[in-house]
Length: 348
Image (cartoon, rainbow, N blue to C red):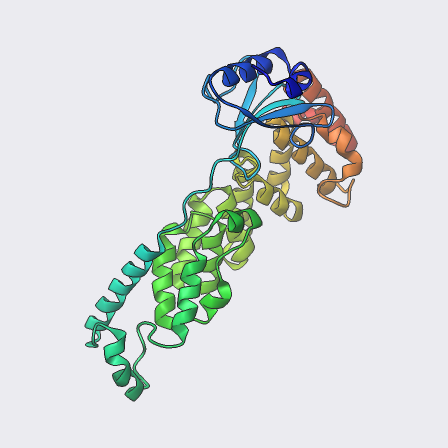
């Protein structure tokens, strides 16, 4: 079942991964790419499939580890214990953007209700003359030039694949140009999504209202690792040392790459009280291999052995942590502790 151009690379796969590849091809899946670069090292190889694996559970099993990534590069990975050989699933399509027509319709309904409460005509066109003759009357919605700023911000909330990949946030310049009543409407849109992602956190921090701050405090308590890191980054005035430490400790324990771990590692590089350093040691010893590599690198940095959080000069040593072999991980950890001057027994 394996096409001729890929047979030599397939012959290098460990038996469990070779069997998985053959089963998928027999079930109608296909190969879209074969290469020897990230996540496989040059000495390894990966096969990327066109569709998610269907012939076996997407979970670890004997001889095969599994992680669900859903990144822009691939969706899931099956690999050997040394992380040299991989079967990858092609990235999933991005979630559909918000229904902007539905958003505008809801906003227009809110506008009409607000006008009724203030005794104004329901439609902006019917009240332009009244508004222009009453300069002290606050405009509830945008029958003015500021409407374009409101629309620009609402439009920016539709995150397509390119915006997601490039890390483009909502249009904060447009947000700053909206009227007070428009910002109140935007606040209502954002508050239910305070724990959804960093973009909502960034926009709520820009609003800087009491309710936005309350939502951000709740997000720091209840949000995922990426959201909590965003609160620390965009609203540091709301985060005391105890809350920041608690968020980091939880994040370093629970988060994975493409799930907030990178943000947590960045924060830990700048802020590492004893509790944070302690969890870095524990994850270097016991965590998943990819996380352990970066925790080990960061421990070198916080102990003054490197100038960067990940010093590529020491990369061969850090990569020794990316193993499911318990003895090999223990040996790497012991050497790490020796080099930073810490007794490894305290973490066993």
